[in-house]
Image 1 (cartoon, helix red, strand yellow):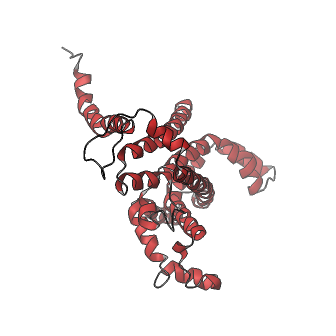
Image 2 (tube, one colour):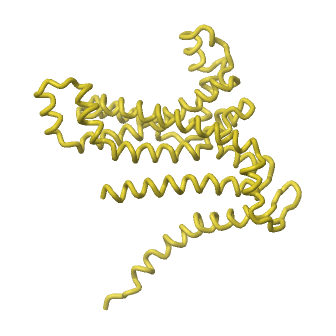
Image 3 (cartoon, rainbow, N blue to C red):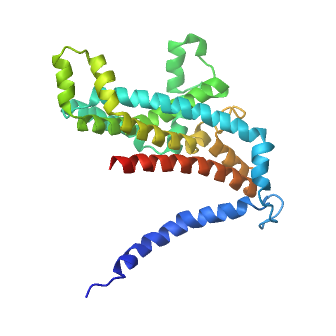
Length: 290
């Protein structure tokens, strides 16, 4: 006899794991965000303060708004250059011949690296004394020879963006290669027979058909950029000063350097709210394509 409750028993372990790793932390963080709790002053949860932490974030913290600006700059440039580079690589490496497959395999290596390791590697590479990238940059642009790149606010931000683009481009390259392979070739072949150039075929035929995939890629990359933390900690640690302090790094510093857990939880929830909106839009795109 078929057990009507078997399906519920089968999903119970997964639900327990989700509850322990997602639902409980979210609930606990929400509870902390409406309390005053600074570990430097008291080891236990402080008094209930309602929306005071959220009000403080929005109206009385210039550091929060600075981290918003830094995150916005990082996200815009990171998303833009990642999409451009990934699409360019996809157009060059689409195909099933051995050379293209081998190059694609090598290009996946940066994506396989953890963000923390990526940050440490790039920090060594840009060391002004013995870094390989620093030596190459100094040879190409003599005015930058011996310059501590990570000590300059603009160059540090550019380096952080470049490391993120280098990390994520292979992933989106594979996404675009799959999308290109799924496109109907009849329209492309008809345009080529009519004498259309490769550039015109791409912008007038291929790119319009890739718009749904591009929209999904943009949303995904925006979510990844908004929550960037590991490589910020290991590459620039938010410096010089606070020039590369993203919102996630601001939460990290507030919680684990200044020990203001209640306030950090409030800031984290505001970031989570933005990401939840983007995730909902992403889910809608995915469901519409099914």
